[in-house]
Amino acid sequence: MPSGAVRVTRLLVPLAALAASSAALAAQQLPQLPPSTEYGDYAVGVATGFAVDNRQRFDPWNAAYGRPQYRALLRRIEASGQVRTVVFQLWYPAAADSASGRLAGPRSPFPATSGRPANRYDFFFQDPAIALRATAAMIDPGAVHSADGGALAEAGGPARQATMEELAGRLADWPQGAWQDAWPAQGTFPLVLLAHGLGGNHGMWGSLGEFLASHGYIVAAPTFVSDGAPAMVFRDEDSPYAAQAGAGELRRASDLLSGEFKVVPYFFRLLFGYEGDGGFASLAAFDPSAAEAVPGGVERTTTMMRNLFRQRVSDVGLVLHTVRLLGEEREECAAALSAMGATSAARDHCGLLEGRVGGGPAGVAGHSLGSMTAQMAANHLPGVAAAAGFNNGPPLTWTPEEMLAGEETAGGLPGGARKPMLLVIGDEDAFVQRVFSGIFQSALAQAGGDPAEAFPLEAERAAPDRMENPQPVALSTWRRALSDRVLVTVRDVGHDVMVNDFARLLSWPAFQRGELLFGAAPHQRRRKPTGAEALAPRPAPGEPYTLLGWAAAGSADAYLPHIVRDWYVRAWFDWHLKGDQTARQRLADGDPFGDLTYVRSELK
Image (cartoon, rainbow, N blue to C red; front, side):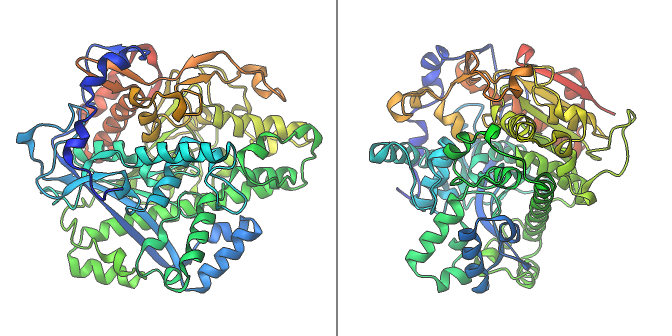
C-alpha cells in the first residue's frame, strides 16, 4: 500500500455524491446538520507515539491471567528488558489552509498548511500485517482468533480469508482528514484521552479525534497492551525484544499478543472451569446447564477485573503524563522521558507540542471497557476533570476499592463517579447484555452460582428492556453518580457503532456489497431479547431491524450515531474543560435528536 494517499483520492467518493444512494438506506432524514456538529476551524495534525514506564513489567496483568502459552511469551519479552510500553495516537489542532475550503463538507476538517494527508495505514506504522489484523478485528472479531494467534481467519477457508484481506485492505487504506507532520496551531489546548474497549485499538477513534482536535483539543488514544489489538509496541526501533528476536519470532509474538482474545474467555474459565480455545465459536457453544460454578470463581473474576482496571488507569495516567511532557521545552521533555526509560522513538515528538498543552485538568472518554476505565480514571487521577463513556458502566464489584467514591448517594446507593459523567448507550447492545445478563446472571445461575455475588446491587441484576432500562448496569452507574450526570440512550444502536469508524465505513453505500461481507449486510441486525427472555438459557432471536446509520442531511450525508456522539461529547468537554457556559446551556435545553434519543439529565 502507498505510504500516503494523494489528496484527490479523498474526493473520489464525496459525501454529496452518495446522497441519492444512501438516502434510500437511511432510517432518518435531517433537514440540516444539528448545530455544533460541524467540524471546527482548525486543521488536524496527527502523530503516533510511545509512552514508556520502566517501573512496570511489560504486561503484568496477562502475566497473572493469560493462558500458559501467552505467559511463556511474556516471560521471554520481559527477559529481554522490554518494559511497559503503550502506543498512542495523537491528534492536535494544526494551522489550517482555510482558503481552499473543507475537505468534504461541514463534517470534515480543513486541509493543513503543512505536512501530508494521512490514511489509516499511518495509524499502524504503514505495516499491512498490523493494519489487516486491526481492521479485521473490527469487522469480524470471531474471524481473527486462533489457538496459536497465527491465522487471520479460521472458518470459511481461503476464499473467506482472501475476501477479508480485500475488505480490510480497502478500509485500512482509506484516507483521513488529519495530516501527518502538520505544524501545530498557535495557542494552548485542553487534553482529552480516548480509551478503547476489549480488543480495540487507537485506530477506531479517527473521526472523534479529528472532530475534537478541529475544535481546539489535543487528543490521545492509546492501544492498551493488556487487552487491545494489535500489538504495535515492537515497532519502536529501540525495542529490546525486537532487537533480540528474529523476524519469525517477532511475527509470531506479535500474532499471539494480537490474536489472544482476552477477558471474556477468562470469565468462562474462572466461573465455570471452561477453557475451549478462547474463540467466539467455542464460547457460543458453551452450555451452562451442563456446567457447575467453580467455588470462589466469582471472587477471582472480581479480583481479575479490578486488577485490569488498575492497569488501564495506570496506562491512562502514563499517556496523559507523556503528552503533557511533549508540551514542555524540547530538552526538558527529552530528559524527563529518558528518566522514565523512554527510547528514541518515544522522545521523537519532544518539541512537537511545545507550549501547546494546556495546564488545566484533562478529560477521559472511552467505549465499553474504556467507558468503565474513563469513569475510574476520573475518580482516581487528580488531573482528570470529567469523564464520558459509551455503551457501558462499571459494576460496583469491578471497581477497585481505591477508585470507589467512599460515600453514598442521597438515595442511599454506594457512590460512583465523583466527577461529571456523561454516558451514551445503545438500546440494542447485545454484547453488554451477553456479558452481564447472559454470563453473570443466566449462565451463573444455571450452573448453581449466585448472581448476587457478582452484582450485589439489585438494579444491576434487573432484566433489560428497550429504552427505559436497556443496560441495567449502565443505568445503575448513572444513578450512583455524585456530580453532573447525563445518560443518553440512542435508538437502534448496538455495541460498537457509536465510536467505531470501521462500522461507519462498512455501512456506507460504497461498502454495501454482500460478497464483501459474507452475505450479511452490516446494518441488518436482530433485536436483543428483553425482560424474562433476556435471562432464558437459549433466548429466541428477536425481530430484524435496521441499525442506525447514514441519513441525508441537506445536500450531504451524515452518519447519525457519530452525529449524536459528537454533539454530546463536544458540549460535555467544552463545558467542563473550557468553562463554556453556552455548552452547559445546550445540554440543559435538551438534545436536538427527537425520538432517536431518550435522555436523563441532572446538572448542578
